[in-house]
Length: 83
Image (cartoon, rainbow, N blue to C red):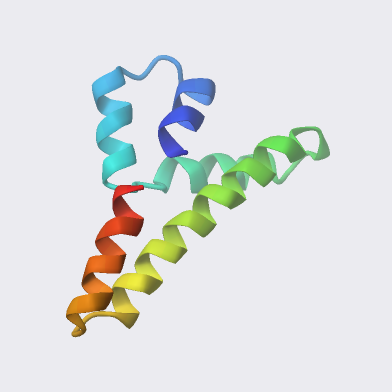
């Protein structure tokens, strides 16, 4: 999801850089762009899309924190992260 958003809104980035940010779930550009987009109503579709990206990131982090010491949760978390 992050990689396709970066491709749409930051086409100047190299594919390798986009892929690396997506694999690391680096949402810094999403947050920065969302903050700027909130100033105008005309970019509401982009704001909604960025919110979904942030929710995906929060889901990943919460699974990791909730299942820190449980091996079966670790396996489930690995499946979620890889999807």
